[in-house]
Image 1 (tube, rainbow, N blue to C red):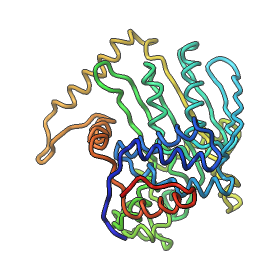
Image 2 (cartoon, helix red, strand yellow):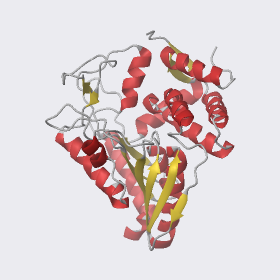
Image 3 (cartoon, rainbow, N blue to C red):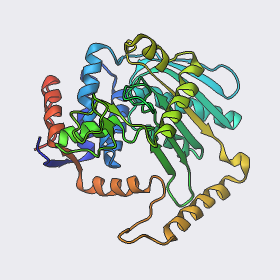
Image 4 (tube, rainbow, N blue to C red):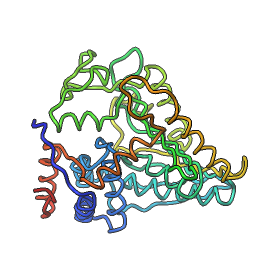
Length: 349
């Protein structure tokens, strides 16, 4: 596979993806949202969660694994807690609604927690954590999916790469954002390596014999981040999301040896009113002060910048908004197949 890349403007990619999702039956607003989330990931350099996912998503839409016209059912429950059954909605559609509910609850109760069941892959979940911080809240998002990661002592798919994102607003500084999976890397980075024809580090995962591999095409199971730490965190996210809504994912798959029909994913969106612990402006200023001190610490040899969580993505976004998003030729070729299927033109020369 060629290692060549071509660049495309973000708005052109958003428009293309929007048209693709509309072709598969989504309304304009949901199509646009989904597209913006994907391209937001590309803009921040998280290409593993960007438009390279579109071919897989269209396959899922064709098979009914993703519901193009979901009936989201909200149960307000009581107090700060709500539950949203998303009817296998596209992950971005479900998580945006879930975070909006959490923010609404936080405005009333200072804390909002929305448990989301039966959604599908959401992409870069930091996008939804930031929705809270843009409203002045701290935001937390977690999702839980089917086994695709090893557990210490085995080379089988036992737990998932369950991600967690945490954001908190600054004052002059943009919100801090941590967005990470519980695996060493997400599967999207493996897909990206396949598209670009590159080898992968040998700590990303194992082949079907349980040996480390540098060939992304041979990778059979991902490795947990920090060994038992990443695997344990993944299991606890499963408990806080899936088990808390009586919709377990990991245990039924391990018991039956078969994936769950519809590939459901569960999630949690949390918004916290930071003003409850002191003046909001003071907390936001302290975030700025913390970042300032991080920038001032002594740098190791060869290090140009010290980044607070989220700042590297912010810097990449500025560059890519100006010069375009680089797409690997493998990704372009797969997107051209999608474009042909939808009778569209891919906006790449």
